[in-house]
Length: 430
Length: 160
Image 1 (tube, rainbow over the protein chains, first blue to last red):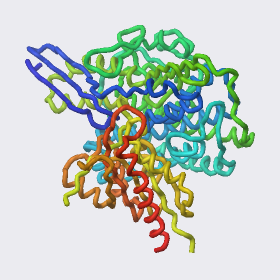
Image 2 (image 1 turned 30 degrees about the vertical axis):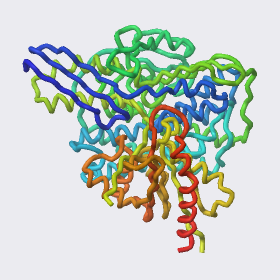
Image 3 (image 1 turned 45 degrees about the vertical axis):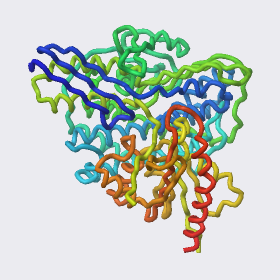
Image 4 (image 1 turned 90 degrees about the vertical axis):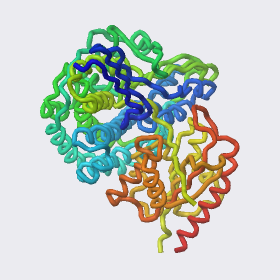
């Protein structure tokens, strides 16, 4: 083991937002190993305060360009709980369908464009176009189907405009559902190729047991609804999320950390797989077998493989839900109305990166208090403890290899540190 | 002859102050009393690579986004995708704050030869990009002129 080594990765690439990895080894002893979050706080909760109940979800959808549908849906669930709104079964199915499409879109982005470059030995997705053009084309093909499904349900590809309190403002025609169903069926070939690709790629060998937390429901692999379940045992209604998340601040991060029964816990695809494996679609179970992913998997790098399994699950479930809608015919029903204009409610959904909570208090139709707990914040403590366990085992390797390994670990969690800024830095020479 | 379909795509995040100017331009166009036929508007928000799906299939695309042009706030310019690539190459660095920002997304599309033939980009100098709602006065003032310019371009595209 080297006596002294400092690693400072300023802005880990291929993650959403800005985070730094700091590792400091002195006299053979690991003195510091942190994932530093330096982004300025985003003040989403304060922006939600004062919003009308029917505008909160539209603002919430802007929190993230990748998880816009999940933020909007979670926000709607919180408002509806607070105001006593009971939605129809059709609304519930359409929302589930929209969450499946967003999860496909986000997971394809992560596995193909953020993780695959590491495994295929290139620096980013742009050189990947040159070395593995077919791989990138396949990814974009799947993203297009997912995006178009989002647009059919939510009125646009991202930041859904048609989703509102109590239901939907507009509905796609049965023919549109029919066409997108055919495209989802055609996507199965690309998913088979995806599984085949990842069967042949190898991930770092590292295991650390942790607590996995996800929404759970008997006989279902829920993206919305259900209760909070832990791999360590126990379940909680979503209203009691604070008993599970226990957020706290740390000096080196502008994002809060979370812990439950242990020093940290993990949310996201691997946590969902470990908690809800029995309820996966049979095709997804077959994909997991092909990928040798087994319940109880303790290797965080394999979160990406769990995402591949979920891609198959989401595609199959989306086809089933569309079949159900087509069988009944999509009814242009009016949104359910609030029973009252004041109250308190918690909404929870499984975002691509893990369980997302929105908690609102409303008075006379206005949000007066809001609390949003995002998946990445829940994973930060777990990432750091993984890093601390990983580093001593790889210290004999060169600095570049250690750095790359740590970056891959952080990327495996698909962190979304900041999902919003879209600014272009350009200087034209006159 | 069918009038050519033109897409105006606004990008950015309204929760980040002036970053939302692209969305604000699309909203202002949507409220225009005499919108040309065949003009489609999409508020793309913070869509990253997803933007490629949105522009797929269009012959003419006009993208509107906030930028750091090292100019006075509210000043705007128009360029082609090629000019944006040249500028980014010259800087030899990622010219966006995001891993998959406008330049990277367009670059992926270019490498795959999937970009629409005609892409025009409006870039508006931001004054303040941080966690707050609403545009600064200087940026807000420029929206009307940008809309006028876009509508003139759309008219010109449809004539040729």
